[in-house]
Amino acid sequence: MSGFSVTWLDLREGADFAARDKTLAARALQWMSAYADAIPLIVDLGSGTGSTLRALTALGAEDCAKNLVWRLVDHDPALLNEALRRHGKTHVIEDYEADLLAIDSLPLTGARLVSASALFDLVSRNVVDKLAARLAQQGTALYAALNYDGCTQWNPPHPLDSDVLEAFNKDQRRDKGLGMALGTDSGSYLKAAFEKQGYEVQMADSPWTLGTENRAMVEALIDGIASAVATGYGLNPEALHHWKQFRLQNAATGTCIVGHNDILALPLS
Image 1: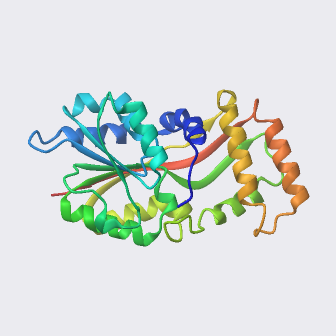
Image 2: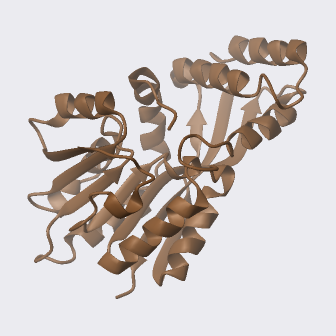
Image 3: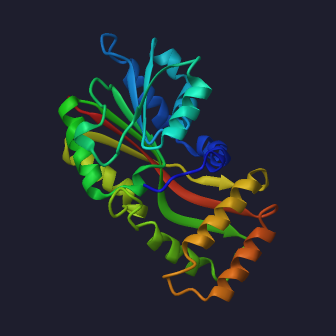
């Protein structure tokens, strides 16, 4: 699986938190607190440095579920170590280094809720299908936030915007180490897969709205997009260079909206 730097994860975290649909997050926490006799355990897949932990803590997770246990699961031990450094003294954390493709052996047993942020656009249909089936067997809910939906709007506009976006969305479907990625279909596919397993599924938009205060993040995003589409998608290198320079020149004053959606899947029984 493609790795993510701590720097990038930190750059995007403020925008991620602002984008999250707070109603769905609140419903996920209500689900955690609905049964007093259930173990308050959240398993966070692709946990990185703990962004979901921080987000749900800020939204009242510890108040909704006393003695809450976080089981952080990631393939990258460096990110897990960073999460423990940041939160090992303030939260009850179990950390697991694991292959997210190995659904049958993931440490999901006992989870009241499985969470993930910005993960499912990277995985394959097979991963989602297997996860939905396993969680259904356990009666475990899923809270999946920040699934990229393929929509990006820049201001000011540039003539190459639509071509770059088309190429980038194609690139999002490449195998990132978790099978052929769902990319822009991740939210709709999650919804269908969990409904098939008998879940009540709620979906809400959670777009990034990026402005002057997000300049460093926007510059990193522009660099990442330009690198992703530089080869294999038929874009003229000189035109792409001009697009990148234009975007960087406007990063301090322009705006960018990047579409995402959040999913909450609750067992009906």
